Length: 448
Image (tube, rainbow, N blue to C red):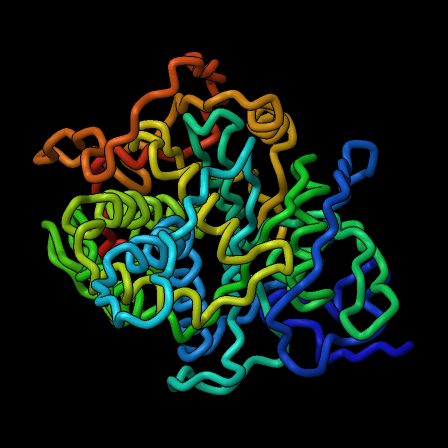
């Protein structure tokens, strides 16, 4: 067993300030395309959650900022297009034109795959690794951080879905995690959630979120950088509303007030900008990201996308070729998950931030509000927002046309399905639904 200081990310200031046991060995070796995840429900209610005191965080380099933005875009794109990826393969196979050759029997019809039974919990992680990249993102960081951690929850009756974004600077307890090379890494009482990928890979991030939420998470995917530009381009851009000008010298993003069709590098800059939106905090940046995410969901669920074979194929190829799946995921159950998401109305797809409070060097969980959120999900209640961070990170788009119900792929309602119970969340659980058209609150250089 060994301790390697280089495994601790410079941006999280772990090594100099950690008061608990660090991982005994770094993760190394070749990339693994399949990762085994624990399906054990690890509720951490009885475990104390002391806060690690950290010093001033050094400002990351420009290239690291770009890399983190790429991770944001990848995870957000996959969160909203995971169903499209699977539907693409299914729809493309149905659209193939064939001619019988007169020799041998014809192939049978494409087997029908039904929606997955029951609910779904799937973790989506975006890392800052540049390993094996075909693009230039700058020097590969010393440690692989999960700068984006998002939990997708689909209800048992497939009438609602919730996506929870965990702020990357939130201090959480990290359980004992398996070392991909054998053995285990020690548990830690309080570290930033974005360091879990560096300790024990995707499995460690899953175990941490399981312990934090009390939910069992059988599915997970880690997203690579190279799919970012392809996915944002494949959908033809995302219409994003900006309420006031955005000016950010860190990401070199400058947008006037109005609606912008963002894709590629411009979409990356928008998702990365922190100083150019809201109050300059990571929490209001998540509000801005949810504006993008909601617009992206509306775009990918629109008839213009679902009936465009080239867009479907582009999304499928870009995502699948740049993701690492847990070994619990295969094409069949991806299609099943997709078919569970397909009939859910936009108003029942809710994006929320994991509730936090400010702490020394970062954030810490607001456990009372978090318990309300995850109790609702674990008891299969749809969630209702009582606060939208109005005016701080986003505002209602005054020119928005109400989002129509999904008409691209109509699904007959299940007569046996009942109206889902709705749990009203505390007012510090911020977010929006996919049906809401909102505008990001910009921030000029004069206000920074």
